[in-house]
Length: 497
Image (cartoon, rainbow, N blue to C red):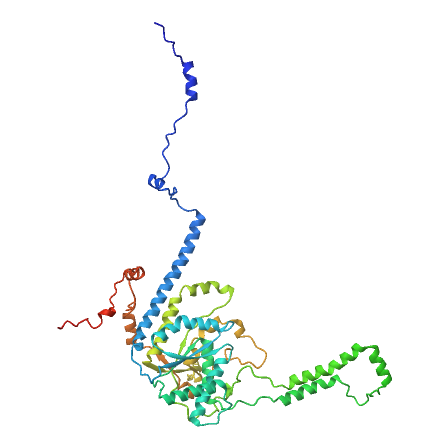
């Protein structure tokens, strides 16, 4: 028997080197996700920069959504308060109640800002109350004043049967529509009408237009004639020619003139064009300049001396003044962001005032307060001999209308306070002047306590609102159809026979 060779340590070493190590590490990730072919998702906290970004954007988005939700809720509250008016039947020969809306471009901005504010905050409540309205807009300072004054003058001409001025196309169209309505027997609403004014600048023009319409004359004040203007211009253009008595007029030589004309034809053409240019300029000066807008018929200083017409009503149509916050400027960005995130308060306040106008259940008169002054110095030491009574004298009378929305003037653009060149009026810059005869006739809409309590009690109750599950069923088509089919008409409830 042969002996087996002994295996030593040196012989086993090469086999260990040639062996491949077996990997026993566990597979990373969830095996279920790996079998489904999904990537390995490792949950970990984001970095510091991502945390800052997500917190800032998330906070701002949450604030915007919160404000938008409560804004819609506030608008819905006031829409529900006046929605019963839209359910009332209206005869076919009756017109719905109509109010007048006054909009004006804010200082330093266009009319679109006022229109957007009206469509966003005012129009939903008016539509919910089935209201009709006319709009008087002003793109520049003084347009609202001119429009309201002309509207009042037309009313005065009809009541006083005064001769009318030249009728324009718009007035002729309005008269034609009114004649057609009278022929068909359609009548205007006999209830309280009312005016809605947006912003402090529009309110100033509204008050000025009321005074001009009721206290001003029918005819505009005389304007400087074109002849006087042309005479002034011609007198200024005379020094261009020599007018001294000692100047001798040189005699012309035909031969020299012909040779000069042949030698220099450009100078002759220029000399021929100069008289034509002067004639064109003279014609332009002779043309009367068309006014950019209707000038005021009366100055505020003449209110006290102007007579009140007999056609003036004892009570003017009530009005509602709405706040219109409008701030411009790069450095006012923080204030603008704060207002953007708190629009729910504007929606609530505006909806309340518009609901008071739509309901028209409570109307109050405007008040006036007197400011007093004393002739004695309060810091002076009292006299030991004989006490003197303080002489208290009223210095001026401040109307309630003067203080309405007065805080908005701080947000106006600086262009509203700068002096303008030309004949433009400065209604926004001037102090509001109110005559007692007009101020006592002005009224303001007011929301009653019972109406406000009913609005707060029915807050958030919308009969047309649907739940989340109802909306999902309507979207997926799972909603039950409760309507009567065409072949079932006449069979419902007919079980006789």
